[in-house]
Length: 374
Ligand SMILES: Cc1cc2nc3c(=O)[nH]c(=O)nc-3n(C[C@H](O)[C@H](O)[C@H](O)COP(=O)(O)OP(=O)(O)OC[C@H]3O[C@@H](n4cnc5c(N)ncnc54)[C@H](O)[C@@H]3O)c2cc1C
Image (cartoon, rainbow, N blue to C red; front, top):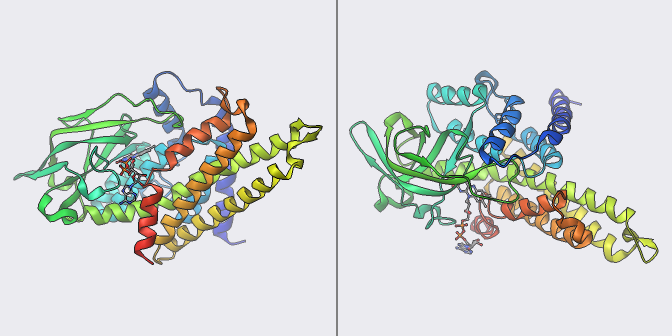
């Protein structure tokens, strides 16, 4: 066993231990923001928001493969609760790719050491899959920029200490006119909505963010002028296999629940598992689950070893999200009314699966990325 394998193994054991201790304490209060802060604080204490941030900035300094394995482990034990630290990890990657060493180390250190959450402000009412259609504007001034626009769905919106916002400085340039800015939510003109009521987002928050004449100094722009679209694509690509790892953990949990249940539950004087109408679909789902894991690990290894990874990242996200959706639907069929009662784990994962379909791009968007490389 290499030193890296040993480190991974220890971190996985630690993640299981963390989940065992944290799970029972995850009682959601009616105040979504308070619940989200509490859960985020627990994740951040163990650096799960900063697995990919370098050690000299206070992060864990892991490679993508190790981070994926840990996120899968956490998702298995705490399904539906990883969106907040994963969003921060996405945003930290964007900061890592974008800036000069001094500036990026400052932000990354603050995020890692301070246990801070970050929000990712891209989607607008008229710009969902068509990212380049954003209309939020960053008008140039002598001091920097003034940002105006509305982002319709932002994870972490009410707990974030930083927001990364995408805006266009030159609409006539299309993609080349898009830039990313890092803004503090307390900046004058930033308005955070009340959280949406969303099922399947355990201990997380999301909502609308309005930018009304928000001043942003030149140093708030991430990367070179006009580099926002490239940054966005690179970060989305890197995030997709991590989302796939999240889906894989949840899908594995559901599979284990269904197998245990069908081996126990008796109908027609036999356990359900003994009917091939039940066990053969489970065999197929176990195979798809294994394939999901191999796909996300392959994409992450490609990132770690400097190979092209965009197509493989989309394949991993597409396959893992669809596998999760299909296993949970099957589980709901098998568990019947038990699957929909209030406290059922399968119900929570079913709801999460509906969200996972569009996070980091819908199935069709993944297929568009894959097709573009065929
Ligand atoms: C839980 C959750 C968290 C999210 N968090 C964030 C966040 O933190 N920040 C953020 O900015 N955004 C966030 N999003 C938004 C997410 O990225 C968008 O929902 C996603 O990009 C899809 O956009 P849309 O819902 O507007 O769908 P649309 O783009 O309107 O698409 C609707 C349907 O049409 C299909 N479609 C669209 N165009 C094509 C085409 N050319 N060919 C074939 N089919 C097509 C799509 O696949 C989809 O099925 C989040 C979404 C969810 C569900």
